[in-house]
Image (cartoon, rainbow, N blue to C red; front, side, top):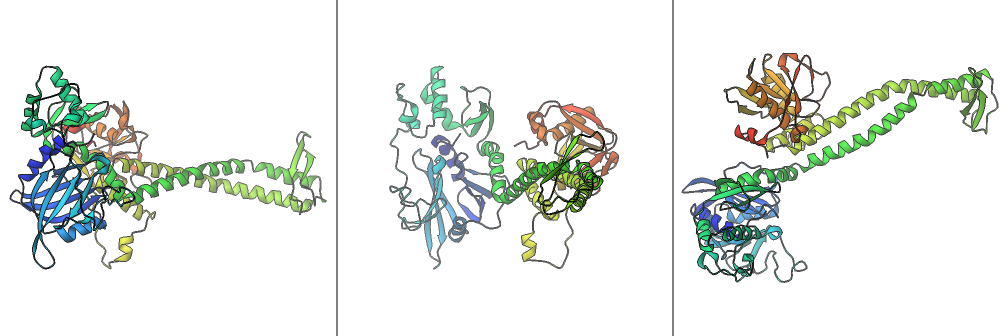
Amino acid sequence: MALDGILLHKIIPEIQSALPMRIQKIWEISNTEILFQTHGDAGKQQLLISCHSVYNRLLLTKRSYPTPSEPGNFVMVLRKYLEGASIESIEQAELDRWCVMTMRHHNNLGDLETLSLYIELMGKYANVILVSPEGKIIDALKRIPPFENSRRIVQTGAVFEPTPSQDKKDPFHTAAVDLEVPLTKQFGGFSPFLSKEVEYRMAHGQTFSSIMQEIEASHSLFIANENNEPVFHCIELQSIGPCREYPLFEGFDILYYHREEKDRIKQISGDIYHFCTRSLKHQQQKLPRLLKEYDDATDCDQWRIYGDLLYTYQITDTKGTNQIILNSLEDESPVKIPLDPKLDGRGNAKRCYNKYNKLKKGQTYLQEQIAITKNEISYFEGLLEQLDQADFNTASEIRQELIHQGYLKDQKNQKNRSRRKKKEELPHISEVIGTDGTKISFGRNNLQNEALTWHLAKKSEIWLHAKDYHGAHVVVHADAPSEETLRLAAMIAAYYSKGRNSSSVPVNWCPVSHLKKIPGAKPGMVQLGAYKTIYIDPEINELQRFGIDVG
């Protein structure tokens, strides 16, 4: 569900009240998102512009975002022109889904000039365009050359043409409604969803004017679920049912932060996804070949029998022959023996014995390779599951893990090798406090799991992990936790595993002292001694009650 003009109408005054703001830093947090770090009378603020085709929006946010080391061309242009500039005003074009921010900055000659930043939040056509005082485009996030759209060209040097007005009535200044015509065609700013909600309310006795007054007075965002998808607007969604009310900007963060977070992680660490997916596919294709080779190797005794028969019957002249049939020494049944036509009988017998010895010795090697391949498959499956649930820190630590394991090269250290060895810091460990005050810690990747289990947890504390799944190591920092705390810890272990969408997920638990490291195993792998099992349903609402991110 996308932003409509009415919601943008509610957002603009919230931002306008914080102006003027000076732009201190400009960051590209994904291919479609730009973050301005600003300072004004209200202190430090973060202004987020998203041109995502579905999640496009404009808001002030308090969330933390990653910053790629190499910004794109458009962000470099914005930094050149706008870092140090002051945002003076922001205005919406009637009730359309675009607005313009007026910026004042000093040019190369030191003269003060005014630039315009047009923000268009129109679904897949969403864009950010920087325009000079002369009305020419300096640059745009998404350039549109003439061969794509001859009516409206968006590229450097072109004259900027604003999006044409839709010439619709302003719903805040009219009470006349034609019930025979859809509201989206009569009024500016109306989306099909808002039109549905307003029509529902009018059908139940509420007047159009009172609904618009309620919209005008609102400073909240109401969020509900319809067909397992979130729907939202700035008034209570009576046509949907129960909904939650949030402050406007906080509501948008709750809606979109985690949804776009996965896109950002894939963009920032896409090579990790690609590498893990490619490595998993390679190992999955390798395993059947190894299993077939091992199956063939287990039939090695057949080659010894072939050699025995050739020697016993004293076969000599086999050159030019591909096979020979001899009677078995056990039951006189015929045995077909494949031959090398280049060799005589003695040479073929020797060839059979050599093949027998090779296959016999190869069984041990193949068993080792099969075990290694299965471990690699399990390892990369686990990494991909962790990446699916990862936040920025977790994804970054997975990259470091792959570097430490020798799968990836550390390009940064190769370019700038330091002679001093920095002390390695422990990875980030997530924590939550139970209702009785007991602390529960959990890891979300192998490095975090390793650090938590072997460096931070005490031997007497309780350790949990979802049975038969890749997932989080969870430690309850108590020797004898209450049943409620134990169930919360089990729920965390179940949620941060592949069983998160299942019911009655088995979770093993035991004191840390019952765990043992597996020699040569991948990070995060442990061997359990005596343990108990608890069955738990992962409940998102319960986890959210304790402040756990369940994006």
